[in-house]
Image (cartoon, rainbow, N blue to C red; front, side, top):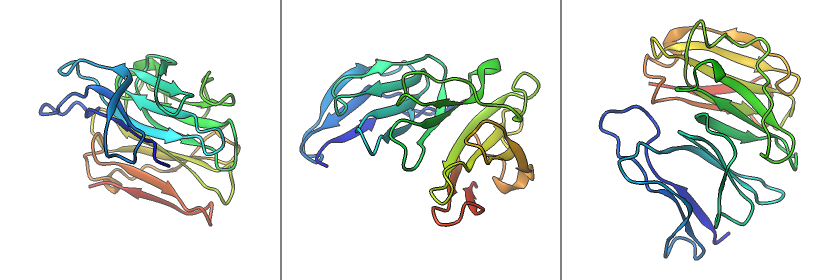
Length: 213
């Protein structure tokens, strides 16, 4: 618990953003910090959307402007798994090796929900039923999984053209297929490219909470 990992940099297209310098690591609960093997030049436009830890093995996964990064040694060294922007990653509750990620923003036709069954090493596509990103480009997206029913996965997708909600979708089969739950755009207030959060109730798989402006 003394290992603390931070991914620096703002990953949005905010004109005033400060680009990060990569990943830093503390082994003394934040008293001192040292750079990990993943570094980036300040001014290079690099930033992290999310960092998660595997509760079983301690593997770390980070979603950044240039894809998924993975560490199997408590954050000391990192390997780039792919190079498509990832805006969220979540582990399946109670699973030792299953995780979900969503590619978005600059992903273009590659925008999609993906899953991994080998602790983040490979990411096959799982987007059956989601909007075609070639027709409407995706902006920021967020994922949530309910511990009450581990097969219930939610994703909220933002329309890149309007920054409003393109749709909140749900899978009841572990991301194999998706159905639209709502497409009411005013739910996130037109700033979904920046202000967006999503959580699934761990005690009720039918309840999901979304935050926006």
